[in-house]
Length: 290
Image 1 (cartoon, rainbow, N blue to C red):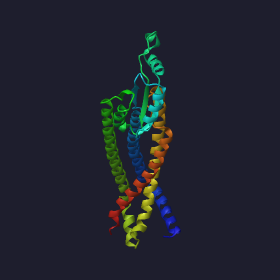
Image 2: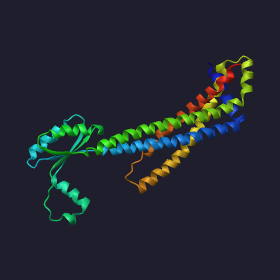
Image 3: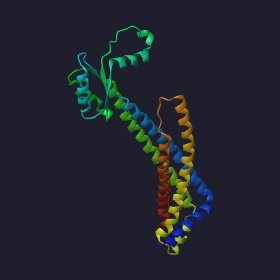
Image 4: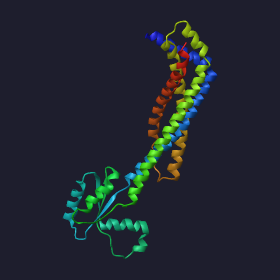
């Protein structure tokens, strides 16, 4: 295909957009509205998953040492625990440091003069939080380890809830994506239907299917691009406001950084163009049979 011919397709697409501007605006509005709804649920889903990952990362194992463990035992144990497959990080917490942390939690006045009853310990994090129960079983068998705690029972239930929450979120996203594509495709179909005579005339004078199809594909991509750009602008402004409010009032909740939103925004532009092209392609197919 010649570059000049392709340039003519773009020219025809823009002329058609202007000539049928009200239908074009309706298509852009449908694309923008659908992608705003889809984008809202996408942001909700990815932020929920981001929070779940943050919760998972806080799951750790505490291994309490026997009172007879000396400095040599502590050095040996740190190396042995670090060598267990799946262990990401091992931090030693002395009984003095543990007592200071406990005082910060309950108040120093309540524990004033009390002999330190806490043992030395290690805090261990796993590469994959799902492996915590298995790693804890291995740590229990290590010499000089007196007791291992990781929230047994609660952690398993937490991971199960996270698993199902992700599945439900994915299903909701797929459903809303399908609804959005259906709405957008049908709106673009109305635009194509309004120009069915133009398509029939082009076919009667000998135009090939692709010669007829290309301007509509380009037009659909432009409509999708403009609609998705509008949705990104609205979603970006809304997310920026919500991010600041949550960060100020609920600092313990970690939302997805704003930089990540713009990565999704670029993907959204591509999705909008793809949906516009597919909507035009499917809509024009029936009118090419002359």
